[in-house]
Length: 417
Ligand SMILES: [Zn+2]
Image (cartoon, rainbow, N blue to C red; front, side, top):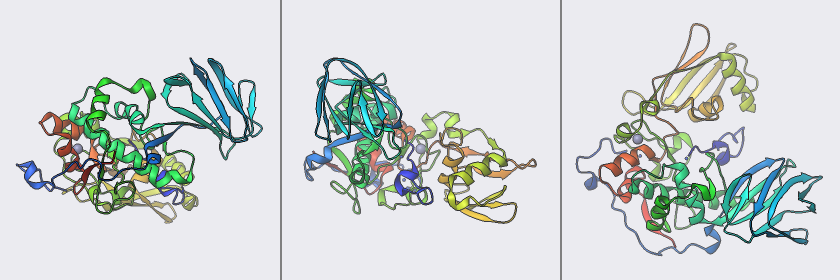
């Protein structure tokens, strides 16, 4: 999961916002951790909380949809239609939505007659809503119950062949995360989560597997809560990322929120399971012209910068000798400065997040003016559960509850349905 900062702080100007510390691993792990309890049905979730609306396509100019059993359409303009089995082209058309030869002057809800519907070649459970977005393109939204949604998430976010206890930890983290995002943002828009790394990867029916279903069934309805949580049962955004590199990060340094379970912890597990390409990534060199262009086009407040001359970390997480860059200053060749979070800079320079793998690195200027990102450690934002660390803990015999309480300290495991 790579959380899109813009998704959370909503502005590129501050839009530009928006996926744990035992100082050492206790020899007797259980003795220094908060005990977790599963309390069946202590906080019943509202039924409305248990459907997830997934944004499959955003501002698209077309989509192909097919069913084996046909579907019914109800449009918000009051019209309806029945479609027989087969493939239908969907396009925006003069502010309307055209499905095959039918045009609708409002949002359309498709009620599918089968187990699944195929959209652009991928199969999805549940129903579909299609809307014309503010820019005139199509938004395609898949709505289904949370457990079926998670069946299409867990296997995308963690290999289904990994240890069962790691998959269970992933299931609880993914469940809590999506319910939190729905609670926090879903009321102001027609969808709850994106189907991408911006929230959680969702691959639909074809991403499901027996191993993932087993992990979901074993943890059904279980979420993590905390004292200052928000939403059903007091949940919080259970971010997670691939490889912390040795220490997870305080959420306030990356996402700005300060839930107690999102404080950084030492992690000695991922180094036993993650490969070198994640633990110690190779240096990346970017020309100053590229750095300048990406920063100035990414932030309206930084448009006035000329050629970026220096990148100076102003706050670095303290993990001992090194740490992640939390905040930094960019300085142009005329002395003008701008301030950015380290994670914002990383994803502005590399939106994929796969080249500049983390903010745990050194930034130095080269003789030719380019910038070198070296001594890189870890893959991802580093907040919350370290997925390779969860694998490492599971391999050493820890159960999913221990994994979760390790990476989300001061959290409680609660069953809400
Ligand atoms: Zn780790």
